[in-house]
Image 1 (cartoon, rainbow, N blue to C red):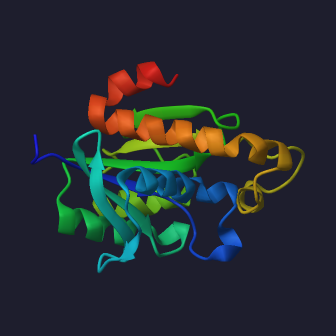
Image 2: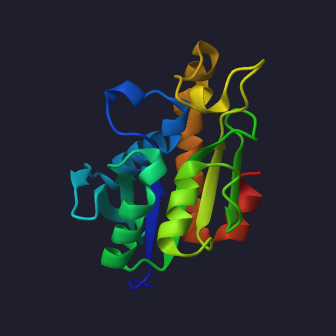
Image 3: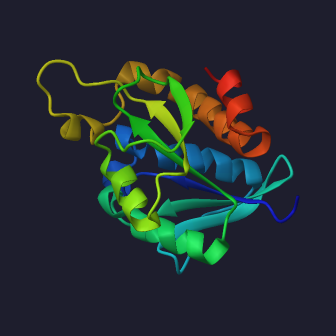
Length: 187
């Protein structure tokens, strides 16, 4: 069992300007997972910030690409090449789900998500797990690209810590119990 290694990637944009953005939910969830394994992110030659540790006894590498979202694929592919994980999980925002709704799947399209498109292109496969965190669609005519680069609303921020914790639980379940069991627990 010790040979199994999960790479959990959180998608976001680097820098303080983007910290509270909807697009950065992957980073926020990984910060919670890093706290659980008792590690601090450190720069790695893959081009990502990395924490290595264990979740419920399972070896994990947590990775936050240092590139912007649209270029996430390079650091993810480098981390995969370096760590040789048996499982890859990508945590990202999802416009087509209501706020804080979680969905997990293996493979599939990128649904217009440029971070996923970059990862799929760099890995040469769509066959990696996705943990989608709903951020809802903007109301009215607001451009979805602008919307995801805005901070969560005041109402959303009131429950965000709880929802990040739940998403971290889902990522942990995906790694430790498998996709089907995790889906059943978090849908």
